[in-house]
Amino acid sequence: MTKTELLELIKNLENSGVEFKRDTIDNRALAKELVAFANLQGGRVILGVDDDGSVVGLT
Picture 1 (cartoon, rainbow, N blue to C red):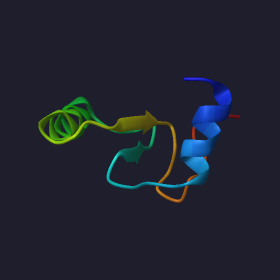
Picture 2: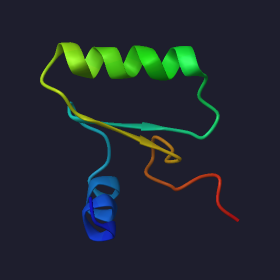
Picture 3: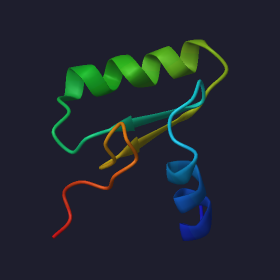
Picture 4: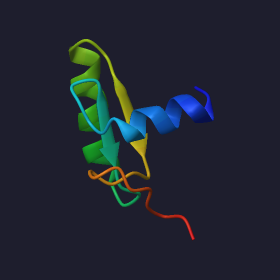
């Protein structure tokens, strides 16, 4: 994925194929999200982005 593609995904916010997760997610919760996507049509989990599309964890 290119930087431009990533920024476009973030700009369009979450949907049925894109899920944002903050940098503080625990392993079990992340695994649950990944399994859910694998059991459906697939998708992308983007770490370090808040639900409102703001990038978190960078200074």
